[in-house]
Length: 481
Image (cartoon, rainbow, N blue to C red):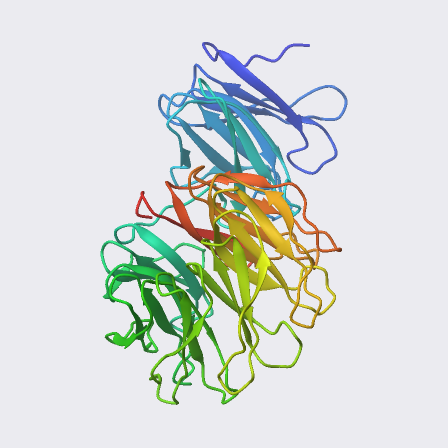
């Protein structure tokens, strides 16, 4: 039995599936020559109803089709790869056997999409698509989300050479926002978030010279997030107090050590006011600035750590309810741990060996034993060091995991909702991020890579679209986004 696909249609692809939930198989056809998609609804006895035609646009030349529930409404949708326009568009399915073409222009590519398939790769009950291209040696996976389209990565312009990124809700609208420290333009970019996980155009705020690191917290207890930035060349930190609408006051500067490279926030003296710690690369120490109730800070106190500290993080490593400090030191391929006394002062540093040229450090409990552990991104050895904590301020010997080329920033979160913490790393020279899923015993699976912009320097995580799944945001140094 034959069914005509139309004169001059030049049929390129045939896909079979139940489009209307009647348990009968239907047929979807990609008609390259006539720029449309044909549907034959099945009766279940080997016969089919006359076809429905869906226009794909002038000179679109559809070559491949994938079907799946892309928007989570339990109705099958159709994705079409258009060779002529270098786009993939979606046709949303409805229960009455009709389909509506997506109003957006879809996803555009530099190369022509050639083949496409669909399945639920991330177990979110929505189908994703994987696409192969003509003349390229890679495939792309695009994740579907609730507004009936797909996303791989979205770029937002910021200042010159963005170096560090942090996430928080700056305007108290329950949507996450982004702040980026821009090294060459001597400012920070603030991008307020929309409900659909997109972001408004940046607003810039001047800070000190060559900002390298940014962190956020409520310094004056007004329920509004504030910003602190470590300024490499001016040897100080800039504090910008936040307003309720997501804007910020003019910076206030505080002197720290020589070449501050990283900043973190915690309450070091248990007075319910946030304090600041800064890693000073050229003076080989950390600066601690205790906070006052009005959002200002006391003069720094220095603690020697040695060997060019590049990154600092905070956690309670000996379970005494007092925050401690850990610092990554590229000069000696170590991390230094400074145990806190609870009055804002700290003990002498103790050292643990890690990989070559450690760039970034983060802390969390990877093996669910209630003891904090450490992960370090090692630039020159292109790997991670994981040090499991004993709970007394000491740590087991490092375990290494390979990642991309020159990992520069590391963050921690549960990406697959299995209650086990995972790791994401920004790889500076390979222009990608590595995701390592965690096991219950504190070990990690082999990395999975995802391409990002040029020279990624900082990575952060948050749920930007309120779907209870963590997302990733990356600052790309050379592409200024």
